[in-house]
Every structure is written in structure tokens, then in C-alpha cells.
Image (cartoon, rainbow, N blue to C red; front, side, top):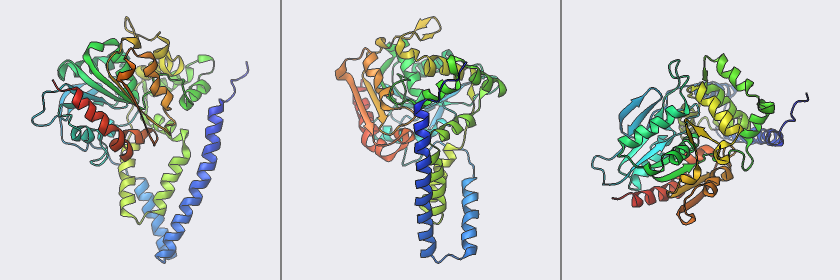
Length: 387
């Protein structure tokens, strides 16, 4: 049997990566040489720069949540963090669902100046919660989609029985599934960079799934989970994200060399690397379910997705929708997000679509996304949520 040809999207991405890497080297080299000449650096100082770069690039710390809060509930796979104000208004609560993709959930509270949490607070959301996904262990390696939905159900109950759901990436499609199964508990639904139609747009991740599972054979993924004791290592996902656009990783490291004497640049680099390089494993059963039913079979929009004894019918979602996408998001192209407008039962007048100028991660914590898009969305949620 002949092997499936390499999808065109992967070939195109590899070509862009090659040219992008060349441009990154040229740009960073010019920046570094210009700086070295300006400060009249000696060969010894140039060597010291490389040592400083290496120690900075390999430094590892645990990411932290930026905003004061309390943990009000815990499960084997998650924690519920409460960011409500000391004297919250009488309003329907808002629950954030961060991505569950091998990284720490504090991406939604990344930094005091780049935080969905603080943006939501400033916009008037005084009853505010966020889930925090816990890395898989030997005890939780078999956690299922039903387990994750149960955590959301418990969290909504703890927040008053009805909530605004705000989901980023994987947290977004998880919120969509929950809203379709329990529509009466969802006041509004906001998703950002969250695939609903996993095959729409130019789905580079889907191209990789096709390449690694020819003929829909999931042996590669099952063997990967089996080889790691029943979990998917977060490092594997991190490597996958880097492989999608390797020129970005190269550029980030080269720019660190070029600006190693710029304290502000080094500080920004350390903040990002602290979050980006810190990984946690995902339950293997949950991961394999995602690959098969969502990335491969696209069952969420086909209307064939089953969770327990129920079929996930997107038409049951009738609440107001806010759909946010990144114009240059190569992980979740905008059409994958906006597809929810076509399949949900929400009236068109109650659907808002917004597009930021940046990519995937910038959609969650970029200055432009937070100021120009998240802030007005959160303000609308606050206005809609007053009793």
C-alpha cells in the first residue's frame, strides 16, 4: 500500500519556515552587530554575551497567577479559582475555561499587564471564576470527557447555577460541548481561538493528524500514550507547537542574543518562557478521544458526537455568542471559530464575531487583543449579567 502524500499545508509551512528562519538570522545578526559596535564590545564581552544568553535561555521557573484570588474547589483534574471582588455586584457569574494543552492554565492571568482576569475585572465583572487544569498523574491518566464536563457542571453550580462561559482554545470547544448539553445553565458563551469545525480554513494541525494517522489508523497516538505510562507528556505538545512554526522559536532566541543588554526585552522573554516552557501531562484517554472524535472525525459539526448517552447538538445552544479569532492564528484559523455561528441555534443578532491582528497566543494575552477586543466583550457580559 502506498503511503499517503504529505499534505500540501505541511509542505507550505516548511517552505515558510525555511525563509522565515533565514530572515530571522539576518535580522538578529544585524541587530546584534549594530549594538556591539555601538558599545565597542571586546571579544571577551562578546563571549560573555553568549554565556548570559545561555543562562537566560535555559533558566526555568514555575509560572504563577498574577492576580490575588482564592481556591474554592478542587478535583483530581482541576481547581476552581475565585477572583470575585470583596463586595461583588448582584450579577450572573463568569467562568473562564483556559486551554488544556500541556501548559499551565495561568495563561488567562499571564502578567499584571496582560491578563484576561484583570481585563474582566476592569470591565465590571465582579463575580469571576477560572478553572485551573491539573497535570495528569497515574491516578488521573484515564480521565474522560465526561470527567471534564462534570468539573464544569460542578463549577457552574458553585457559581450560582448559571454562568457566562468564556473558553480559550481547548477550553473553548469544551465550553461549546457543555453548552450544547446543558444550555439552561449557560447565560452567554464566549470562545477564543477555539476550533468548532476542526477541518475549516487551512488546518495545519489536521494536516499533521492526517499524516500521522494514515487511513485513520490511530496507532501512532495510541503508542505514544502507551509509551508514556498512559499520559501525553506536555513536552510532546510543546515540541509540536514549535514544529508548526519553528522560525518563531528561532527568532525569539536570536532576538534574545541581539537584545541581551536590554533589561525590558530580557524581562519579557523570561516571563514568556516561564509560561511557555513549563509543561504538564494530559490524561491519555482524554487526549486520544480528542484526536479521534474532534481532530480526525470532526464530529462536533457533523452532529455525530456522543458524550455518554447524549448526542451533542449545537442547535441547542441559543444563548448570546461572542466569537474571537486571530487573523494570523495558524493553530486555529478564524473559520474554525466562526463555524459555531452557522451551527448554533442562536439568533444572528445575538452573535458577535471579532478578529484580532495577532496569532494564537496573542489572542489570549496580547495587548491589542485585551484592549480592543476582550475589554468591550467583558463590558457587554457585565451589562448582560446584572440581575
